[in-house]
Length: 256
Length: 256
DNA sequence: TAGTTCTGCGTATAGCATACGCGATGAAGC
DNA sequence: GCTTCATCGCGTATGCTATACGCAGAACTA
Image (cartoon, rainbow over all chains, first blue to last red; front, side, top):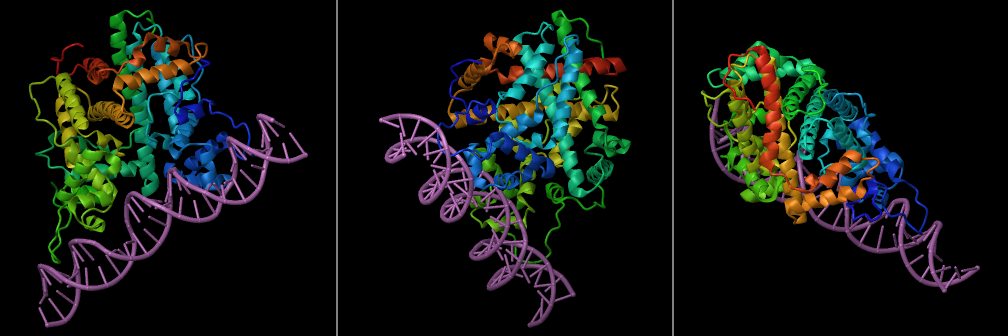
């Protein structure tokens, strides 16, 4: 941690505990940590849409405007909430192959998202810079350390993987939201989608899609884990092709 | 197009031109098409945040509440705008290998996103069901028709690829937004990010990341096309592993 | 012609984020 | 200990947003 910190955006200063502490004035009745936790409780109970400043304040039995003594904006609060929700990464497994490591990494990150599905609805503020986000990044780099990929390639692989995990979580969140809103089961929803497609589709214009719809595959609610693993394996297979072509030092990965 | 259409959600009924037309009453002063186009003009000029019902109405010199005669909600208008913005897919190339086809498909979709970067900020409403979205899906299925993948696998590959394209577009949109907001060039922004990381990072806690930061790779604004192609190649390589393992009929794809 | 449906849109409502500023609190400085 | 200063909590105000409601008029149907 460098001694001289350039002027940080408010969200990062807060996330890293680098906000200047007041020298005088009345004692604070709240802490940033309390506010973030209250926000998390609201999101967990009623979803992201319920997280308003007034709602969070009500959760703490304080006035809405008090919160602005601790966070610059609601945007900042959301950033802090997301970083807290994702938590620190799991411990590194030094004996894992790059593939095992990245596979476990992706699964762990998906698990964190699943515990906080509201989180994927928070627009991303910028490149990873908060403590936990950097922790996850560090872990992924650890697993890629012996692949022979250069720094830029490693970052790109991590970006690809983490975007994949996030998109998976987003789809899960969306189905979850629809399930709650419409009070239908996932399979009922997908069956409805299949039926709707079948009715909309002109087989002359959409022959391939009509065949897919007729196959019934769209009408089933996929097991999310199967879906996730399928896509992840494709990605890891593709990265494997590159790693092998580079003659990376890590030869212990298993073929798909 | 089936004769008996089950009751459709409003956005789909509108998108497919299946809204019941009024039999009597005064002549309409607007059309849905006009409203969508006005929304697109606002988004293109000032970004998604500027697209309010009152702003779209002002663009058309009508009262805000008139719009609700044509769309059920702002959400519906956004769905229509996105489908219109993405437009129909390019023409199918019957002579292309699955890989060439999917590669071109992904690039074309990214190009459409790039023309309408605001679009990635619109939360997805559900599985693809609007006319153009189904058109793109149909094209991707066409390219995968001889891979030996089953219907479910084909859908999963398309999902993986389209989510990848969307995440790429999202990152580009975010950088674009930051560039405009902060009035800095992409390289200045990334240099600032690298500097910020360097100052935040404790090399004991984040050794791998510190090395990446020291390498300078983070401080450069990547060429987005290079970034996109890198990730796409990984995905296509991975899918290729699967296609080869299935002994698909399409053997004309080129190795990476 | 009468009845019905639809149009455009003004008014109202509820909700939201946050600027501003007041009175009180408590630390720093002398 | 007293004074000054910075900060606290939060009431009030502002501006923006989406959309419900209902009126007067237009246009179609029987």
